[in-house]
Length: 235
Length: 249
Image (cartoon, rainbow over all chains, first blue to last red; front, top):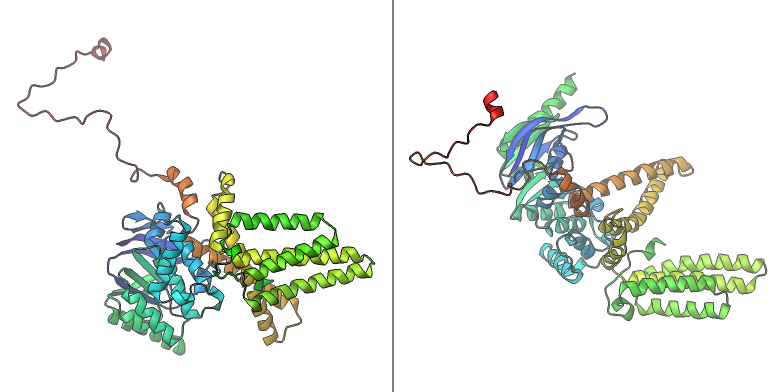
């Protein structure tokens, strides 16, 4: 369970609020977050993993405060970035997944076997020894997901994981995320994907302006976007 | 040179099966010997041995030829320079040294996985654990190697972007975006490491004991058995007579 208790974030230099004090309890298995660019949805997602810390209030994951127990929270919460290239560190696919497992498995042979098994589960076993630079964008995103899942998190936060992918890979990665037996929180611009969640949050100008049924959330988001566009056009 | 990196392929050759410490020792030993020995015959012998070792690891042909081609070109320039100075023996010795060290480095990198190298560096860095967690030093080495091809790619993309804007002769149009994008990449990589919890456990282990809060503290160890509330019908405990000081109060 993820709990936001009046969690607020401000820009470190200017002090401009990025996220207004937010109180939420996230228990559903499939949650989507939608909103305009720069609305604060990624900040909201990063708070869950402790990548961003609140300046006010707190965020707790299964009772662990992200400020006090950052390392433990990150073991529970896997984070998938928009651009997988920044997430891949080692030269080959199997070595990259094995890097995630260093903390859990000390023996190298066992670690490599576990990494291979993680790649097999995600359908990348044939690319195990291929350089990460030689993989396609979709394969890289899958590899990043394999690296995250290898650490057996209980929650996966995916920040626009399909934005850089073509239609085929978008469908594949989206279906894979939906099939995970974990709590998945997806920040997305893909409204079809957002509609498939159990609960959707709409973020606008640093505030959660809607929290509830995904279809209603999409309608609210459309109104927000097109209403603002027509206001801009008439002004 | 970039093609020399990341060319490891798992195989069952002698060098693949050799322990990492042996390969690193061999590399250091050959490098020192090449510098110290200025005999051209020995140099040629060492070069031939190193090239054979490289071939024995069955590296990917294209990447190897590309990488070695660049090295041979550098060696050729050095040789021409020495020949022009009239130092023929030194020219042969220097060219041999450059090619042998590069070939052996390539043989080691093509037969050693980054994971094995990371383990080796981590073990090697253990005496420095008071300064930095060994795991962090190992990850730093991996990140350095990972950053080289990425920085080269950023430079190439910046050059193409500058050309597209008709500014391909302006070094500023290439270097400034390259520098800012490289910093951006470093920040992204740092966030990814943070998000994946890599090299965090060493630091956490050192910091966390100081950050323990009241809520986290383990339940107090009971030095005495818990006080049982006396039942109503039980006799009250004997009252200790008040001391002289207490009576005065």
